[in-house]
Each structure stands twice: as structure tokens, then as C-alpha cells.
Image 1 (tube, rainbow, N blue to C red):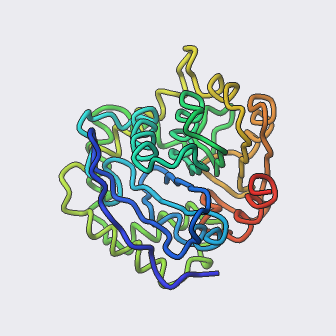
Image 2 (cartoon, rainbow, N blue to C red):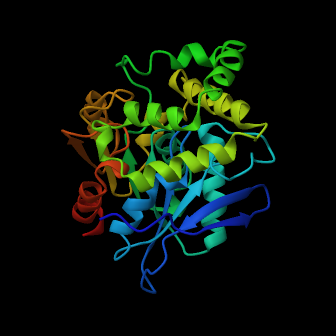
Length: 295
């Protein structure tokens, strides 16, 4: 199912930040609440179709994390996974609906794990799609990320990338993130291009991207008690983790580690999916959620 267009966007003013969010309209009163967090360089638009598929079961909100989409950077400047987790916590407490169903893709999955592991009172279930967690497996498409993260290098390289036309940048991202780029509808492509253009004038875009990347990579070498896989051991709520077998950014072999670390997890590897299964196969992701979480 492809909905007609993106869900309406609104700005939510909180004590420590302003967040841009998209709310799937038309959900029946009384449905449980879901909050969804996108990956590095993504936005709330990454959840449009999954929100549509789950509208009969969830009252869902997709968030632009600080400095991404239409959200300005947070006032404390923290755009690490933990900083993004604090933003999600602030928004959930603002909703005042009790624990919610939490979804996260890639970097958003890393932030969602930070929240679920540290604030179990806010999370009713956890769904991670290609989560960016420390891995023993490198892939050919993520090997450049540590290079970009080097101070000074990223500041030179990212602005050069931003000189390319918006259409080329969006298509390049789709080519990497989708197993089959042809699955992107013309409407979704046009929405993504329009959003990229709307961000081109923002002076903080490169800085937020690089600081988020550096903060994420820092968790990969964290040896402390709150390192990601240790946090996973504290997540007792029902958990669903979805990988794409054709994901060039997150190796699906990490699925084995999930089963060892999360106490209450179901793991699915979609054979014909890339890095953003919620966009490429929203029907499959919704069905998996219904089976393992919703029921």
C-alpha cells in the first residue's frame, strides 16, 4: 500500500529542543502509540508507508532527529546516539501516553537501543531495522565512513558531495540503501528530492551529519558498561530485529549476535531487502510486527 503523500508535519517545542514530527492521521482513538526514528542522513519521511500499513494498529509518530529533516540541532549540541535517545525520551514524555512501541532504523536503531536499555519505563516494545550496532563484519559500502569521520577529512569531502544536484544525491542514496532501486515510487522520489533541496541552505547540515557519524562510531569502540551490546542485555520488552540480506551497510550476519544478547528477541532476515526494509518492504515489516509484537 502506498499512501497518497507524506503525513502532515508539525513542530513540537520541548524544553531542550524543537522536533519536527509527522503523525499518521486517521488512527482510531485508543490505539497504542508508536514512535519511529530514522537513520543517518534520513528523516521522518522514511516511515511514511510503514505508518500507513500500521495505521489500523498503531497511532504512529515519525520524528526528525535533531539536525535532520526539518528539526534544528538540539540546544545541548549532542547528536550522538545517546543524545538522539534523549530527544526521543523528551518527545515520548511530551506525548504523555505511557510506554510506546519504539521503531528505529540504522542510526535511529542505535538511538532506540540507547533509550530502551536506559529508560525501560518508556518502551513497550522495540523494533530495530538494520540497526547500526558494533559488528565484527565490515561491508564494502560502509568502509568509507571511518574515513569521512576523521576530523578535517569529512569537512572537506561532504561539502563536495553537496555540490551535486539534489536528484543525483537522492538517487545515489537509494542505489545504496535499496536492494532494488526500482521499488521507489516516483512520488517518494520527488518528496525526497524536495526535502534535500529544502536543507541545502542550512548552515549546520554538514556539521550535524559528521558529529552524528562520529558519535555513532564512538559507540563501536566503547568498552564501558553502557556499550550497545551490554544495553541489549537489559532490554526485556518484546523485541523484533529485521535485517536485509542484500544490505550493503549493515551485515545481516549480526543477526546471530542479536539472538545471544537480547533476552526477548525475534530476528528476521528478509532475502530481497537492503538497508531500509521499512521503505522497500513496508508490507513485510508490518506483517512481521503484527506477528511477533502486535499479537
